[in-house]
Length: 189
Image 1: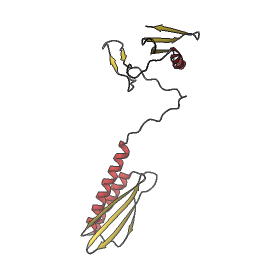
Image 2 (image 1 turned 90 degrees about the horizontal axis):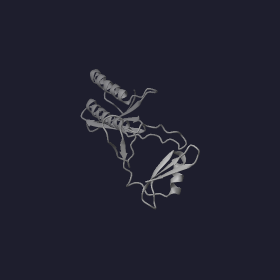
Image 3 (image 1 turned 135 degrees about the vertical axis):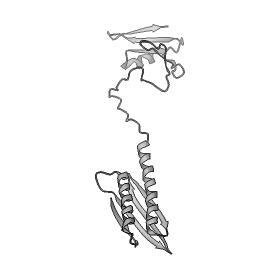
């Protein structure tokens, strides 16, 4: 990590400087930028025997800022580094935990078909009827579907082999099936 100092810092003891360098190395590992070096800008100031230290680092389009004030320079720097470390951990956690949604595929692209057991939609409730052997699932879409006419069912079947719908006139369940010769069968219940 490249560190740029501004202001008039007091000279730190070699042991203290070693500790500060180790803390900056830890920050560099947390920032984990592999393609280029990170830069930290440290600003010192001194007012009436109070030493101030400010550290600024850019990370993932965020400017992170840590400030510390104390009676000596080492403690002020340590406080600023501690605050900066907390901010980095918080930004990393947000970046990692952000819920990401899948990109929507274009309508013309073929969608991968999932098995019936894994396919769920918000409006359907899947309930297994038999525990042994092949599973049968009951789908309850009565509340979400409006009744349709035969003409609407013909428009709906354009890319499928069959359509199950509730008839608007009789309020009964009908099945419209596309035959291999291009004609249709209508099963009325």
